[in-house]
Image (cartoon, rainbow, N blue to C red):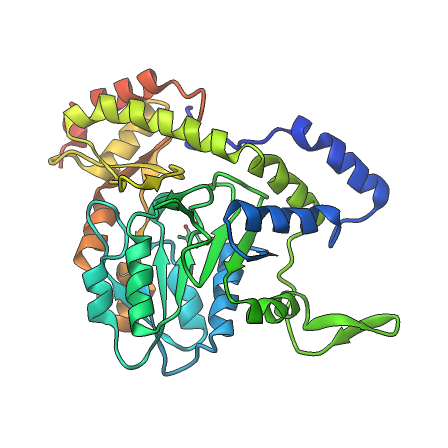
Length: 367
Ligand SMILES: Cc1ncc(COP(=O)(O)O)c(C=O)c1O
């Protein structure tokens, strides 16, 4: 089976640091956690970064920083993983679903403008599959309305728009280090922010509310949580961050080769702005008209190629449809018509594309 993903890390790359970590007995709050945090900030050209247990806890904490609560509205991109809206729901606020572009899959500026009401307290805009196309425009709209922007860059480490890396565009940005991402620590995440006045607050809240020492103990100046990334995770993260730009370049080569072979048969790739560096977190195509996407996935699995859907129309999930009955048409169409193909260096692109092209000629794959 040709798998959908393959991690960009081997044991050999972390062996030395892992051995030293075991010898030292320091598994948390060690030198690698500190270094990884600083390296993420430098890579994202963000003034401040924090490590977290996942993008979900990172997003949730950013909303807490903004004091989002019952009665508030948060505009969210409607084509994403449910975590993007779940964090809003969890705080008792209302996620207002903004539809996305059928080309870039990112929040439409006009949908954002239409979704803003006097109760809007924040916007969470997603870099769909790592693509930041249009994020600067979304940031500009948010600034003009004086509404804070949280960039859900769960998939977007290594991407940039207009020379600005993800992590430097929005007021707050959240990354994921889940294994489906370019850089993985098993689970894990990070936050970047611009406001220096929030640094102590994030440090405290990520770590039980502690700030400084009181005698031999910690000084718990606030209540807080434990959303800390651990030392072995930081070792893994650092090993991948060093080669991230090369990973992005390799993935783009695979993407270009697949587009060349599949576009003539009607597969439409995700559109990327001219000024965008795209990390290709997922290699996604709209299937040709007349092809049944689910049947195509089934057929390819039989043929030894693992593929999957794109992502979810949040407003159409069973939970959010029942809660709000506000399904957005573009996101709903994308949920039904996108396919994610394998993407990594060393992939046999010819074989994958050959099997995809053969599958769509079969009557089983016709809509
Ligand atoms: C856009 C988006 N946001 C948030 C998340 C949640 O990330 P995590 O698994 O790190 O909590 C994901 C996970 O796939 C995602 O794709």
